[in-house]
Image (cartoon, rainbow, N blue to C red; front, side):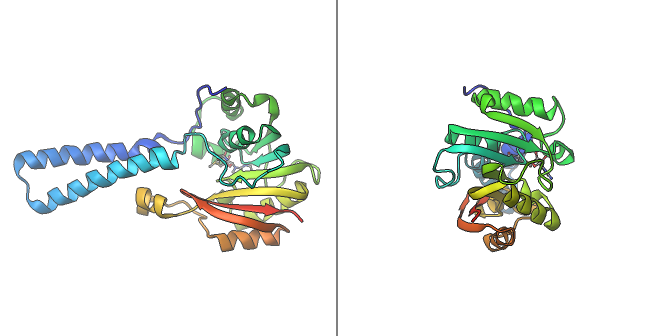
Length: 252
Ligand SMILES: C[S@@+](CC[C@H](N)C(=O)[O-])C[C@H]1O[C@@H](n2cnc3c(N)ncnc32)[C@H](O)[C@@H]1O
C-alpha cells in the first residue's frame, strides 16, 4: 500500500516552469549586474514571478502525476459494485475510485495504442506499468486489466454498476465521443452511475499554460450534457475542479 507511483505524464507538465524560471532568473541577474534598462528588467521580473507561481500550481494544484481524489462524493455512494474505467492509462483514475470505494472491483480498460504512447511514452509494456501502479496502491487484487476500445466495448449489456472515465473520452473526435457514450450506456446497469471527467480550460490552466494549451476537445458543461443526454443518460450533477470539468450521469 502507498508504494511508489509512476503515472507517466511528461516531466514538463509538473516541472517545465522551473526551466523558464531558471532562464529568466539568470537573465535578470545578468541584467542587474550590467545595469540593463528598466523595461527588460520589469519584463524578466514578471516572468520570474509568473513561472514561480505557475510551477506551484502545476506541481501542487493540478498535480497530474500525483494521486487523484474523486471530484464528487456523490459518485458510487453505495460504496460497492463492479466499475469500468474507460481509458485507464497508467491507472490514476482507477486508483482514485478503488481507494475511495474500497468495496468495489474494477475493470481497467484501455486501447494501449498510439494515444497511450503519446501521453506516457514507451518503456515497460503498458499493462506492466498499469499493474505496477495498482500494486503500489495495493488494489491489484480488485482490478482486471483489459485491452479494448471504448467505442466498441467488449462487454455484455448491463455488465457494470458504475463507470468512470477521466481525460479519455475528450481525446476522441465527435463520432468517437458519441459511440463511447452510447457504449457506456449499453454496458451500465439501469440506475448505474457514470462519472465523466474531461480537461477544462479553466483559469488554472489558462494561467499556467496560456496559449500553449493546445489541447483539443475542451468543451463546456452544456456540450457534454447534450452528448450524455443523447446517449440516454440523465445528468444529475456537474462541477469544476482545477483543470477539470466533471459530470455525474445516471442511466434511467
Ligand atoms: C490522458 S490518458 C488518461 C488516463 C487516465 N484515465 C488518467 O486519468 O490518468 C487517456 C487514455 O485514454 C486511452 N484511450 C484513447 N482512446 C481510447 C479508446 N478508443 N479506447 C480505450 N482507451 C482509449 C489512451 O490510451 C490513454 O491511456
